[in-house]
Length: 216
Image (cartoon, rainbow, N blue to C red; front, side, top):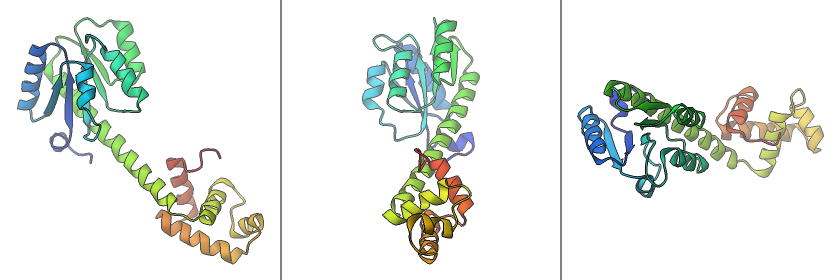
């Protein structure tokens, strides 16, 4: 999904949330002329009612919104597990607010008036970050899906292969489960095939990335 900025403009959206209609209009027009797809909202509530998380992009967010302010919206998204990159824009935010926003994961905190070139640069970086996160999430989801295709016995043996460092040979596992090494060999082959890996080392790396055995 990742690619050059011009490519990302075709798949990503700039979600703009600002209660000032003039700013929404001018920024939407300026970004649109640069080839960006923009969805604008006048409040946090309006944004939340329309955002479904399906399309990649970033959130250009005014800090001083009425009702739920920008920081509260950021906290709300974090609590929901939404990792949409956020670029704050503000006309009256101070250092404490910007520090808190960055600590909570915001990409930047721009004070109005700001140069459009700086905002565009941060948007491009946010697009790249969001696409990378989504690609990573999809890969991990695929790995967990593959793991779910293992039988109960295959899952048991896969856990032993991954978590018993130095004692994960077929003989070791056979002794532990009181079955024959040949049976373990058969299961190991099926496990590697189903997981789409070619070695135990690759299986271990995959399991760690996807946190298949978090308790171990």
